[in-house]
Length: 463
Image (cartoon, rainbow, N blue to C red; front, side, top):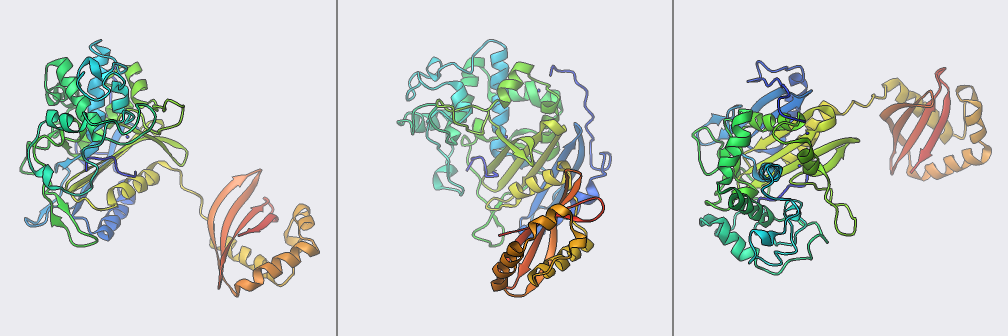
């Protein structure tokens, strides 16, 4: 349950950042664009509530809550409502380990046996492999629904005794497989090395310095916290049972508001808290022993969004879903937290919002260009081509043979119903457009290049 969802997750301290305190004081030029997207997605999902924070240019540009924090009490969600962050907590556990490494108290390449020699193959597994899910320790919580065992309080030691003393699922470093057991063990190493609780270290080194007042252990409930919901199939939201004490720990124990998670993202973008070497370690993809990619660093997934590098992570605990996106090259981040599990809303909405804010919009094909492409296609279907509307290059392409093949190959598809433009770009001093031509029985793609004087240099039909 504490797994990373599909989604599918920096400089010396002292860099200044501006963090708005509420949507009314934040730069809100993106609000008018994002609000309809969010409300539409929430309505379609049937989820009670969702809360969003968006960082742009290193500042909180948007923070707003939508829907309900508690259905029975008719309590609306607000920007102060806390949600469980689930496995997004793992990047905070990683940060504390990196701080301890900076202090010379441990190394990421230390074997687990240095701290817990009685665990399976402890001499072969390193801390780095724990943080990158390449250790081989079996996951104690792969389920995406509540199971009876999670209703009973446990300790991290209980989890390790039961799951980290089993035979490894694979030799260390030979496979990537998500496992919450890794982070429970990482948390116990932190506490053994430091002699302090993980939560106290988080408060002292991250939460208090960054002003993350809402951040804390989900077990420490607050009156304004969101109520957890689940659903069965596509049914109505139902109150969700919560995991008992001890099941979260370093794998997914944290609750906070989206704005406070955004504070962490801003600090991450500005390389606060950790030194440059630590941020390099934090964000460097861990490869398998044979050099294969894992697309995972230390508590962060490595990816791209339309070519833009991303550091992301999802989170899930009973009744809550979370998604945190950091886009270092854009100085940006997107946080989406919700109070219902068993839904695709959070992961899809996070990607949608990141695309809306950070991906340059594709130029739209105008209706007149689609009409022109349709007229030209209709001519080809009749075996005719107006050579006054095309360049000499394209005229050489439209031979008697090619015209015959086009006409005869498209004829079985039936009547042409419409031609719609999908993409417009520029290349080679010309305008490239992609159209979708729909016939009664099938659709085909048309790729055109148009010269500045309006002639077709290309009109290519593909299946």
